Length: 195
Image 1 (spheres, rainbow, N blue to C red):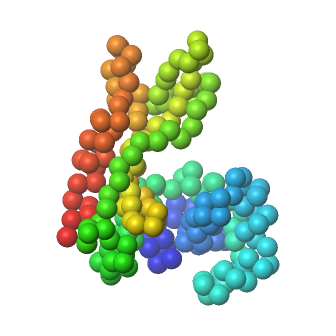
Image 2 (cartoon, helix red, strand yellow):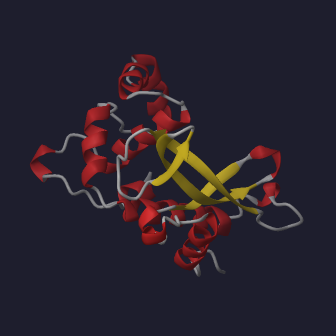
């Protein structure tokens, strides 16, 4: 919670009801409990029983924010700060040897993989990749992600790079590739996880 509290709050101070850490925690819990919509998260993460149990872990928690509040906050916050808080937390876990029992051959196993996130039949952003299947144009979001991949199936994402149509050769319709995205990922994360 302390790392999440360090993220700068771009909201107007007089209108703040929930602290940054509580907002981000509600978003994390929505993903952890695999809530498929804001409405479902509002319904299930604000029940009295859930709040009482959560208060056992987070003293001083008064209420969970509405998911619309989280959505508005995420729209204006600097996502780089959230990424930095995430990286600092992982580095802290590594330094405090929290992952020692999960090491493989006394090493931190790193997995790098590409995955497709969304597919639509319309271009929702100029960066999305394009392809034609059965004469139909598809637009999709593709990422290359580096994760710690421990034994027992535990994976912790470290950093993500999105494939970007504009990074490719637009004139010859040659799109961005996983290899190019991997190189950008390597450049952007170089030095972050060194001793």
